[in-house]
Amino acid sequence: MTTATGVGSMPGEDQHAYAEAVRVVLGELPELPHLPELPGRGVAATMTGRALAVVADLGADLQPSGWRLTDAAGIDHRRARSLLAQDLDGLEELAEGHTGAFKIQVAGPWTLAATVEKPRGDKVLSDVGARRELAQALAEGLRDHVRDVRRRLPGVERLVVQVDEPALPAVLSGAVPTASGFHRHRTVDLPQASAALEWVLAAIAEAGAEPWVHSCAPGVPLEVLRRAGARGLSVDLAMLTAADHDPLAEALEAGVTVALGVVPGTDPATPASDAHVTEKVLRWLDMLGLDPAEVGTHLVLTPACGLAGASPAYPRTALALVRTSAASLSG
Image (cartoon, rainbow, N blue to C red; front, side):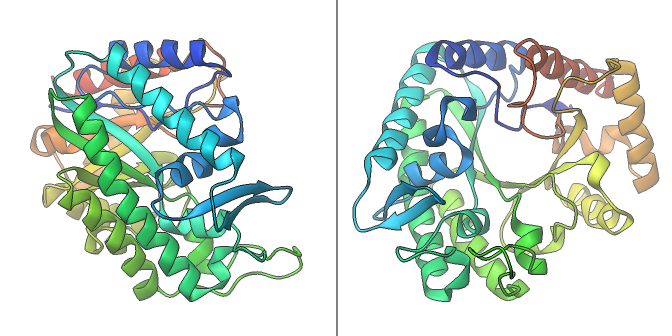
């Protein structure tokens, strides 16, 4: 049976909005709800801030240019850790008794390397040793994070950890700007990119969770993600190119989950119907030569990306739409 989930982020600027987001996710996505992220609450709640809250044994602080690694955790880093713990406390209370599956999200090693600075400035991406240290610290922190989530949600049998890598294509193509903005960081080759992902994905699997990788950017090396250990590939259908279809078909045939973004991440000018979304997915499966009944639970429908930029009312509509469309595909 095809299921549905969300990518992660939701609109909102305070803890009341966070609690409401949890209720919406639990209500609209009963088969695979996820931990909401509300970046509108400030830098501590952004993708980078949340990931740094998980990273083990490294301090960070917020500078005018963004997050920077430091010898000890600064006030904003401590705030990020406190906010994540507070969110998990709220989740534990609101999701009491939830059983089955659940999903959490974290920024991946290459997106962190492209957004966090070294202690003396410029991105971690510029230093091979620094990016290795950051990736390994993320992997170690995720072991503890998975254990913590499992303790809080004892009824969850299947825990998915979605590793968000929106910056990965830019890292691989040498498109990440340096601090000056006049140059670009050197391209990272595929073996190096794969190695950092392997550390993180292996840590997730060893902790008893299911590692996925998500990117709604074009040009994601899907085969590399699978070889690195991804058991789920989360992509935006509208961003796929002809080169992506065979790897995704092979993934589905091999029993790897494909989470397909099929609903806009912001309020569309013309609302879609579940019949329209279902037809769009059926056409894509037909192009791959796959039958909906054959892919079964390995196909998951999602919004195209996070919903943080949407109106307060739209997330419920978007999540209900992917849920009803998934049910229609299941017959």
